[in-house]
Length: 139
Image (tube, rainbow, N blue to C red; front, side, top):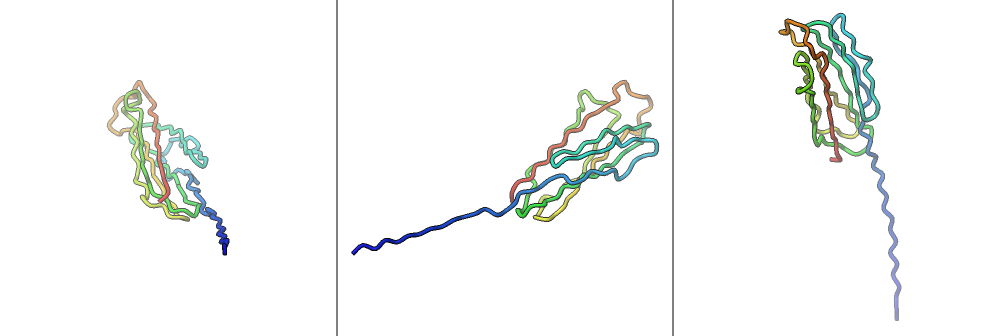
């Protein structure tokens, strides 16, 4: 006698990956400076700071949220400025991001751009570019 056995199965992935930039705002700005209308998309944040005099600074806060259902972990952060061709009078600094960004969580990075207070003459090179890459992966 033969007996036929049947096994059926279906698997579905229901997790949602949705880590993105949700805001950029100016936290602090020296008098007479222009924050350059900071803007963002899901994957980019940008600003165009205009500093007037030595000691001026602008602080931007970029918000990153995990709006998905999958926990995320920080795989890498690289901030590079154009030190070779950019103005030595402009400096950038950043704060650290959260290593773990659980589903529903939020983290921020502060970016400070500053006109060096020790500069005594207006430099011939007046700009310096910052590029940052932040990479989150599934935890």
